[in-house]
Image 1 (cartoon, rainbow, N blue to C red):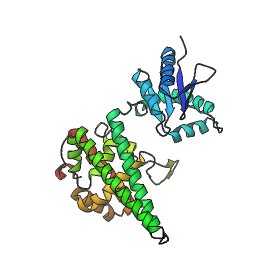
Image 2 (image 1 turned 135 degrees about the vertical axis):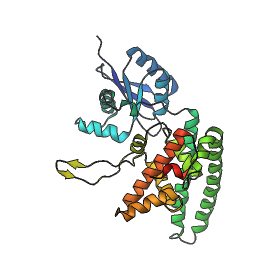
Image 3 (image 1 turned 30 degrees about the vertical axis):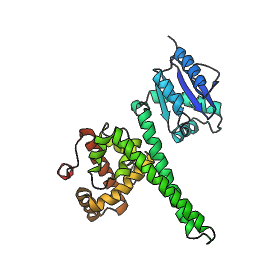
Length: 318
């Protein structure tokens, strides 16, 4: 019986460094279309059980999507997770060749993980990629406007007209960006977007982020969706010590959006307001109560996405 093959691919802007667990030597492929096609043909011959790539700012997507489309099993993992695994294996140095070897070893471990499906999921299709790009660009514009406004007050009088012109330009770009996002959502997600907008505290910008960055919405149970976003409390226990529960990891952009929506919801959403106030009266710190409200809000919108219904406060009182 031939040995099971696992593949690690270290991605850069120009090359793909490929390591296979059953082969002694790595090889390189170019990250353009012809190079990726040659890589696919070679890996199809090897028939690996799992291929792991590290998320590298989008450079990994074309290779991962093409490999997956060819019927190969692909996981794109968080860079921090891959680096932590390498350190745990004693690999403190960092080179493309070594990183590819570590990713191949990581693939073997992930294949035995009890929640293997968390790491191996279909990549975004062209429509979702477009929405993600539009949402990302909107976020960048908001950040640039904030940065320019922060420069305005301490700036010399001679520089202020320039800063104001840049802010005005960026505001116009943001308006155009909002229109593009809204048009895309209306064309591809109108029914779900309308249902989510019925929840007090959830606005158009929040809906766009949820649709773009959390496509699993409505497809997972409440515990798994909370863990995915990073609002599930994590134990910190050892022996007789019981540490404080904390949240960590998850999808930062979704969590930030959920946080801002919750700040509004605990004031204007009757269910979330009552829930938040009840926790405060029970002696919970405001930050703890707010995180709990975030988790409840996520549970509500996950249920709405799952069942395709509009907001009804009677369904969510608990």
